[in-house]
Image 1 (cartoon, rainbow, N blue to C red):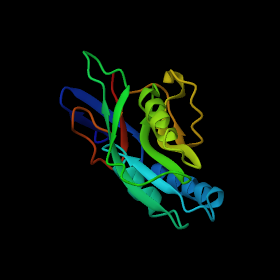
Image 2 (cartoon, rainbow, N blue to C red):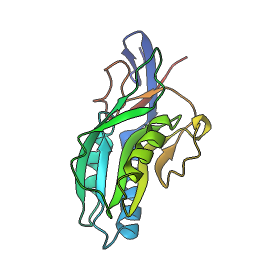
Image 3 (tube, rainbow, N blue to C red):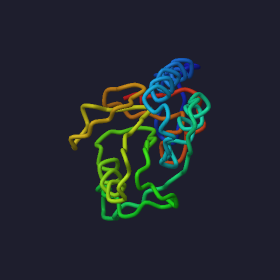
Length: 180
């Protein structure tokens, strides 16, 4: 097996985005957030599980005063995921009149982010934006304006750097895409 490929369950993946590029893009995002949220003391809401690495690396580089909290989303269950958010778990902060930045690992269809933003807006924040490590613009099924994107990617299945395939791969430093 090629040293740049890995096996997770029944699938083979090859290196797609190296850690150095990921960090470079996160540094640029942190600088943008520092500039645009200066004097606003934003609350970063990291969506678990996938965003944990992105959150850690981004917030190590954000220099403005800020808070961070971690949330999980519970979806309505049926035979396939609808992406409809039933409940935001772990949001204990009062976000009224706060500047909120949702941190996501990846936005593809946008179902989850759309549902989450609807629920957050009901709590009357001063503003709410999304910062995502990866965005699949060709997959979006909602008119979302994702202001902070580290890297847009095509519709490839990816793992690593927080993203998993049936539980495996979150711990990988690089991002890998599936080998067809």
